[in-house]
Length: 306
Image (tube, rainbow, N blue to C red; front, top):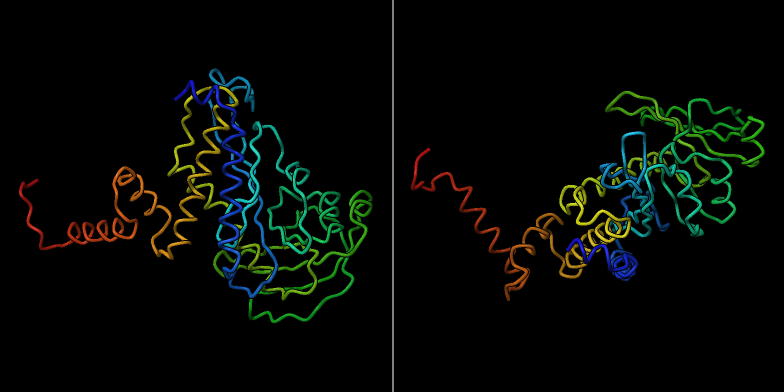
């Protein structure tokens, strides 16, 4: 397997994954985001996959550490990755914005690591929207304040203009600033967006939905074994990552097409143990559920004691 990962071009697997992604996004296009939004909503983030510097010297990250980064744009309708770029660990997150082809009308949700007003203005000029967190050192003044219901946790909903000499040049138009107090943590959060028509609480909810991309990273790392690699070249690492993405998307397609309620993890486990059996997936799921009920039966006698 190591030899195969070294020899076969990773682009074969990347293209296969993209074909699956297109199918999955079509299937999930009618899913609701819970906010009655017609826009496509994306969450943008990256995750770092640690490597051993002595074995993967091409992935230099720090003085004694190697790593690759998996930059991902997640379509929140179905939580399907629509764009993935694998880079070395030194590529700053904000440079991922340079690799995207902005989609007019879409909303891009991202954390403060992507706040670069020149790049955000390019999104704005392309007709796209963004929702992010404002940095604490941002210099701006209030132009207008909209009324808010403080009982909902909202503190203010303002139209602002940037005052920094560079930021004012990079983003010459007004922005919207929404301040919200999180009732769970009692922290004050400041959101920045160019979307002026959605309710302020929807802007807050959109940023909260960004957590789905973190769950995607957690899921794919835990269940698809991309912490250990077969092969040490750049090609081998990218091959294994794209295969893992393909598996994730295939499971999502199966779940959607068959209308299954089981989680992606349950489907992955069932398919992995029945892959060489001629049995329907629904039957396999039913059989697994029956076995679980037997295992969980408190009246089940044990043949051997502890």
